[in-house]
Length: 115
Image (cartoon, rainbow, N blue to C red; front, side, top):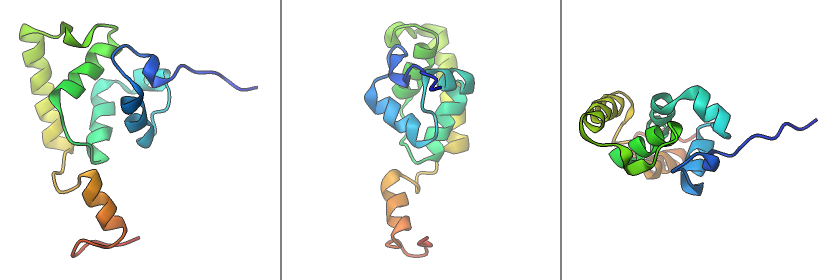
């Protein structure tokens, strides 16, 4: 018996591009994203080489709360910025963008190990 689950894009604010990015890190349905949570999911995206973008982060946070993306204001937005900055400092390696990862995979960059 096949279990049907809602796609990530069924969550407010999250469209097909966000859905594809999350699928690349193993998050393939809305319930899975809710279980993982915004911070852990965004950290997974950063570790996968996604370029950090504050709006992309708070769109995810607001979406998981069922709120419009532009509902984030004032002190709440400042607090989210601190969380975003901590995630970015912990998980983003500027030398590992998607492009650089692909170059490493095919052995183009000096010192990179081609698998």
